[in-house]
Length: 235
Ligand SMILES: N[C@@H]1[C@@H](O)[C@H](O)[C@@H](COP(=O)(O)O)O[C@@H]1O
Figure 1 (cartoon, rainbow, N blue to C red):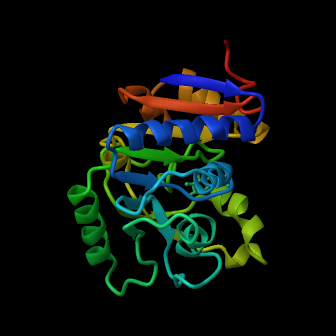
Figure 2: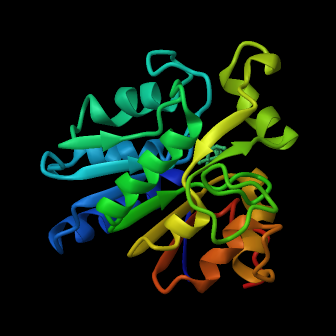
Figure 3: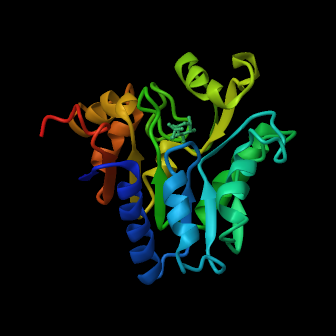
């Protein structure tokens, strides 16, 4: 794992942008994308740039179950608002939160990922070390699945909803098995409330209790941090 610490989120996001640029220049065509507040500033950098994704594919990590794409809390809505409307891709894939048959939807999404191997995957991290919606205890070899969100994730995401009861309890998530097949991975984490998860991910044992710790086993991961998120690393 290569760990890069910058003074603040803005400066770290410029590094994120540079990694996207290098990937584009070396022919990357499939980008794995994430939602949450963390990647927003990196998306801003992409939007400002002259990078062209009109011949590229994006595949998002996850989507809430039971939420329609035009609900402003859906991840589809989020991606359209912050990235796709300003920087279009040839084709953008997300799980369909309203799919009638979840088993079929899981198969469909696994096919999408298999047909479009991810060149560069962008990740955030949850306070409990989750990536995508792979919560603690999720087997490392799992592919797309419906995840039950933990109470801490529901609480963390409640800030985007009017009431905590409105936060969906389940989500489709790309599995760790698929994430680990990405050629290159950037994990971004900003703010003091991510410092524990970051220290466990980088310096702790590789364990399903801290899903992001699996990244220690991937050959090409860049961890981009601000100083607050790096504050519990030993060096
Ligand atoms: N499924 C998403 C994750 O992909 C994201 O990394 C995490 C952290 O979000 P934030 O970046 O807002 O802290 O939240 C959600 O649970």
